Image 1 (cartoon, rainbow over the protein chains, first blue to last red):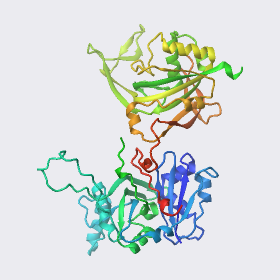
Image 2: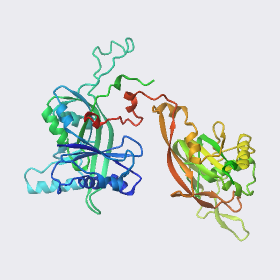
Image 3: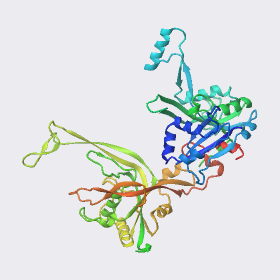
Image 4: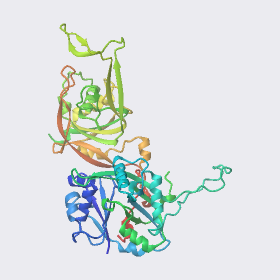
Length: 265
Length: 266
């Protein structure tokens, strides 16, 4: 039975700063919350900063976790609002049905594989040369998508196989007379209902003097429509894209916001 | 002394430019993100018309609290200076007659960098003996010398004094003052409350601020002492109506209230 948990970290504490600075350490701390060691199940997590002065970690685990140690080290132990939330995930999985719409959020590491980069770096050039010397087909390079258009394209490209589509955003047509009718008779397409709300490049090393990891991440928010409940269920539990150990790929669903019509004066 | 002998003076420090330098040296004049004790006491001393060499022992005894209503942003002023006659600048050395020599090799242009806070608003609370604080409040409303926020080129916008309060703690005083941010910042914030950073002087505090002046005498220069301060967050109503529950999730940072627990029967 999967569980979704939310742990609030206190960024003023030294241990929390250390965890927030390095996804490698935070992943280790998350895995420490599981009693069955070594951990073989798929654990997905994501760092969220919705509120100032707080960092929240969302974790999806197959078995029931315990966050006492993590809260003791890096949270607000015993404080109001400092307790971690742990909820059973099955009600959501049961609720998935064809055609239903949800709001979603996803932080992922959009990448693509390129056989021969246009401007290879030194390391890449060395590897290309080595591959050419050996003969045969060289292994491609996993490169990050760096622009918003590429990142959204990456998500749209794989949403079908994960059992959902991203419908078009609802756009209010302009008041009559505001737009020149002669320019184009067709309505302008509002585009898919997804936006990149945050982008980041994570750079960290696994250990002192160890290899450096660089991840280009994007946080997507939007609306999705279920087309294949089984595939979406597998996607919710298994994540999307690479770097899942470093807090990428956890797709979460929430009720659709009905405030898109509300205009703030 | 009983508590009633004390009072709290509240000031609003807002200006297009402010600059609150602590101990900084030579050609790079930094600004702190919040008003320093030296800067605020200097403003009060100027308002009272004190001489540069006059004692400020009574002012140093005031306890200072600062609330950041609008943090502002940093401005760097890249500044060059040279001699209008086209001769080299003076050096720090002197000749046998005691006159400053010109720089060799000749240096014609000096560079200074001066930092300012743009568009910042602070609320400052000063707690001290009632007669002293009352006198200061009057002096700020009828200043002898023009008031400036950290630098002579930074005159304040609007009245500085927010009046006197009867004795309370600095923290309580800062919590009671309404939000003083400018119109532009007010329009950005939609929530019913904002959370503002504050720094309060507290002997039990866990941070040190090096900004307590001993004198403003130019002959001796100012050396800065230390004081213990405490950082906290103060929640203040914005005056906006509480947004409806559904509209609450559009924050200014673009992060909406995506709550994955809402579908789990939580």
